[in-house]
Image 1: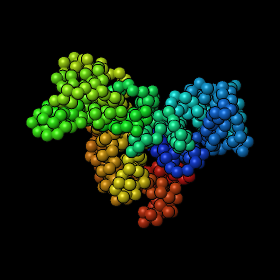
Image 2: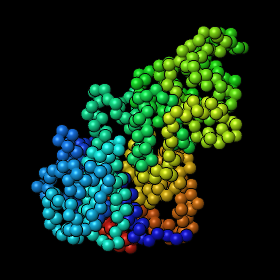
Image 3: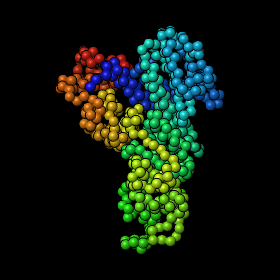
Length: 512
């Protein structure tokens, strides 16, 4: 097995830490401006960013104004751009990132944000990425980096893009809060029971596509089929569809088709009259009737047998039904949402799922990506679960150590978000402190087969790895102060200095 170069490992760790801390900053209380300033500070701390700024589009003037900055002069902070003007203006107008390897060679560069007192333009690379909400640009994040001929520009653009995506989410949430008192067609509209997109965590490209699809179909009455592997959050999307629809004030009824035997399907869905069968001692309303005016969610629809699937087919075709043992026709005003983790196309070919039902249900499909295809969301989900279980279990876990983050990011998550949730809950329960360390994670994440990590290490290497992890965590707590770290670890500052040199730990990167 070929291990990555130490420089690559250090860079990747800094990237993950940067994203993790930026997400925490954007989720914390405070104004948008203060949150943005903290994100720019984190970028400067964990990467090579020398100077940075965020510009946002003003609706009333269509101008781009500096909202937050690091390293800009007072004059630079007052800079204003028009759409299409200069590099920044073109980034927002085109909704595409622009890389300027050397600033002094770019004629479009206006240098409107003021001089760089330390570096010349020939020594700087400028990267600007759009901030997008529902695919529409609302601003841009721009950074200055030292010019290097061997710089991986694609990697730098991706990192800036991830931060811009988190910034966009914070802006969307802030706008929602500002207009929560009046009706809104926004995808993030408020709803009862905490079933909006604040609970659907993820800023990755695949999840952005999911949000876009939901925004297009939520307020319609179209039948929606949610597809994805087990544990990807299909029920959460179904709830979000309902509570962002015109039917949100009406019932949301769920039926797990896999849990119902064939003999009970008709009675459960459509109800029955008294005496319809042995044991039917009273009239009972079915799920369709209970969901009248609202939404009926049929989970695991792929588990319906070909014989029982004829029952819901008639309702889809005629929008009416009778209770079992009854003669009265009941009109059905119900929006149908179904979900499955099965490959229905294979089931059609095998004859185990009705073709006519498939085409009735497959009006608008939403595919939920597995967690292995949305790795940038692992840290966001981890933070979300930390907050959830701190409240639920009365814990005070503040963060996840860098080695533990590496393990979470390298694992392939066959159980998807549900498995990650269980993993974080277990780790918090076994942790006695404020930090989740690598040894708190389950064995499945610590094997070479599962995560690509090496387990056949010597005792000496294992002890040194734990020691390095502990020192790094303590330096994070003390913001890089080695003297305070030594006191917390009950040792001397001389030993801490020796250990940081031995393990190549840069204490300065933990300072604010």
